[in-house]
Image (cartoon, rainbow, N blue to C red; front, side, top):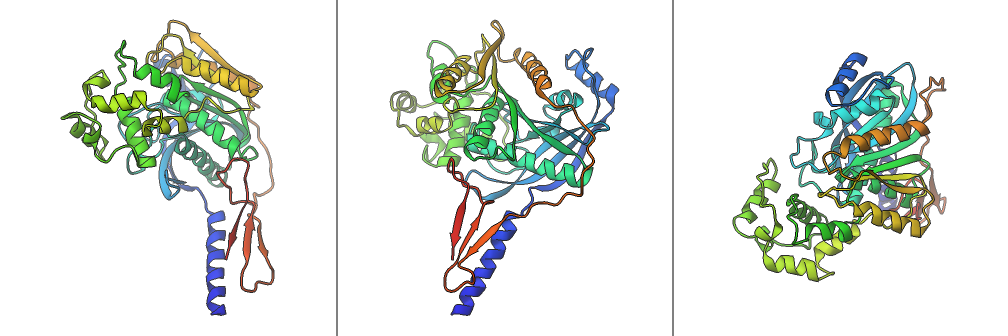
Length: 436
């Protein structure tokens, strides 16, 4: 009996050690290799003024990597990596989080947002761009505006990119991490920043500055008020069905069937769109035309309705960032309420945030016209804070192995494995112990 216990213990210990040493990087496939003239031509075609930019060539890669799904299970995700082609081997890194898309193929690893990758990497930044869960090569429904999976998909891509850069390209980031993203990507950017803080990951991810752009940070407040305003036709009518499908996937308590929420024939339409390989067909502009009246009434009048609880769980206006944040928006945005940024600003300042600002880049600008000035502002701001790329001669890399403590030692009938490397998701907690 004792021998079998010892065998089980050794087996589990080996499993834990394997988990701690697991790599995130799986594979890299080159997507493009553009010299300076091609980078400049691409950016000019997209409307960027490159006359004052000192550009470099850029290579891009599709990255497959290990991450976790919304229930913490291992899964494989995809994303893009853009790498400046310079004489340097260390440079700053930008994590770019993309906005709302409805087709699994409209993702960075399929060259979606290519211009953003060329803009930032053409100006000297390593750029990582996650596809997110449920998009690109990852199966299933996309957990839309689910803050934790937005964060883990982004963070684990950075980890995978670092492994690939180090082992295959002999390049490293310089420990300057900049965060940026637009629309849903603004929400994701805030999610990444918050996740790094509450999980004490600052030594691994040194956030220099964060620029969330036109994001729905106050989902349960400002964005809720915008989409349920009967006096206006909220033209992004897919927002709520997309969010409800996401939160049903994550929390499992919103509905049993689509006809619990949607009128016929829209229940079947939404079901087919959300199915693997489904194609989106436009819904009526107003929710009241395709959602059941009783469902809308319950959402509007019952704070404990599951969708309202889920929205509150994924609010990102009510935490304390310690690093500089610039929430960029435009004053006439009718898709993502500008008040999201104002509410986040006021809440964060009340909590004691040292350097948070909300900046209206164009009082007359809408959601579409705000993209270009937002990306330009972020680039200029990041440039003012970055350390220029360098050629660093370093000793061969030796990865630090996670430290395992075993007690009592020698083992008798029961032992505890203790590791600094097993990180809890509980704010402020970094260590776990596993008993046998």
